[in-house]
Amino acid sequence: MSRGDTDADALPDRVGLFHVVAEGARHRPARAVLCRHGEAGWIDIDFAQFHSDVVAFAESLLGSGVLHGDRVAVLGRNSYEWVVVDYAALSIGAIVVPVYPTASEQQIAHIIADSGAVHGFAETAEQRDMLARLGESQWRTPVRMLTDPPVPAAASTAESFVERSAAVRADDIATIVYTSGTTGMPKGCVLTHRNMFASSGNTVRHLPELFRAEDSATLLALPLSHIFGRTVLLACLHGGTRTRLLAGIPDLLDALPTFQPTFLALVPYALEKIRKRCRSAIGADAEAVAVDYGRAMFEADAVDPELAAAHRARNDDEFAAVRAVFGGRCRYVISGGASLDATTDAFYAGVGVQVLGAYGLTESATAVTINQVHANRHGSVGRPVPGTTVAIAADGEVLVSGANTSPGYWPNFAESTGTWLPTGDLGKLDAGGYLYITGRRKEILITTGGKNVAPTPLEDRVRLHPLVSHCMVLGEARPFVSALVTVDPAALDAWLVNRGSEASQQDWLRHPELMAAIATAIEDANGLVSRAESIREFRVVSGDFTVENGQLTPSLKLRRAVIEQAYADDISALYTPS
Image (cartoon, rainbow, N blue to C red; front, side, top):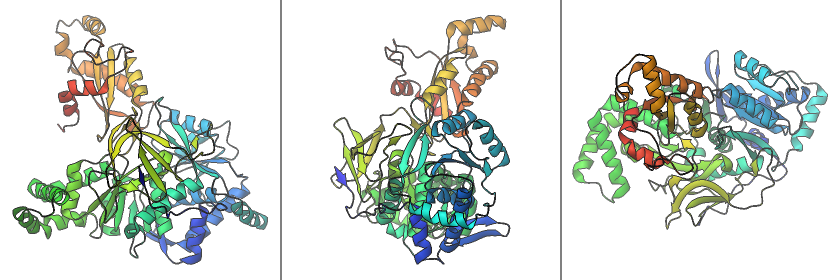
């Protein structure tokens, strides 16, 4: 068992998350904490202005009839307006239901119906109209744009804001975050104000060098529709970190040199993309030196003199260029959401950027363990944040306990009993209390971009195509989702006869006509999910998955590890640039 510091930050019982905003405005009103995009470019927003904007929007929500406990759906990319709506709703006891902009209509309809959302906000007019249509029977107020100005509130409403905000409690529900489950339809994870504060506040306590530094600044490209992004933002508000909100990861590389963050929080996919950009600039030889030097730092007390000399020769040129990509001031990167390749970790260490591996899940409001600046054990995901305890069950499953753990899934959740949260992940603890993730019990795939993907609905839909026998979706610790597809021999024979072909089935496995036919099944399956969960590449493979060859269980379930081993070359081809 590994316990975090018992001297943990906790939200007082009689306040909600708006307390963080109010305290910031009271004690550090002129502290720039957010950057918004305006007509003249990027504009700093201090605590006083942010507090004023949140209160004005909260009064507008009250004037529109938003009640304590109402669910408010928010659909859009990161923006200052998204954050204002979020904290305005939280300040009056409403429950925020974030919706991914890339979610399919089927998923969005499910989230709206399942959460019982009665108010909605969207980034674009198209999204607004879609929300209005999908939730037509349940909206109590018209769906609005995030950029719509708040409706001026009457004096009586302003007074009711004070009363309403004072009625919010730490154990009230703050948000319902929908994440993919084994059935494919997202499940709504309930998180309270206390849960979110425990995760974010104790992340700050765990990493004061990042969040409490006087020059602390970061770019937030993690989506606010994901709990990782919202927890990081709340930690930044808690610590007073100047934060520029980016619409997404694609905007990150252009923003780094001008904003010059001191730290970042990213998923491994983004770190891999930046590494590839750097490789093209510094060359493979310099990259190899950085990786070798980083590994040597991890594994030995002293670096080989020859390697050290090679590193020094490049430090002021090639490696300085890599640090310049990050803006020149970035010292640390929190990496969470999926596992990070060891060579990527070593590469960044070699060029002078320290990656702090972290572990968390939606059900713990993100933070469970994080490596620290002066206690960074590479290969691990760190030690528990203050107030959190991690244990390993007899079967190897990682268990978590703390004020950050969810009371359950909407709508059938219960008050937290303080019992252990089973994570579905397998791991081990070393003598120093560092956690190592060794595998995933859950069948959910997690890409290097941190996206959770339920493979079964995709596989089931692809298998409906007449030519398809089996399908296995891939994506765990990989940059995108792909699939292996086997064809039904009898169906393929009939298909070939209809085309008057006398070629063998093997000859047709890569034929454009067959690929086009299977592509229609892939396209159909992709309609069930968001773009990030969609199958980007597929490969028709020889043979079939059967009970006899050990690739199916007796109940006809896929033996994924066996199939991956048998088709290792085909899988490699899927992820090798042509």
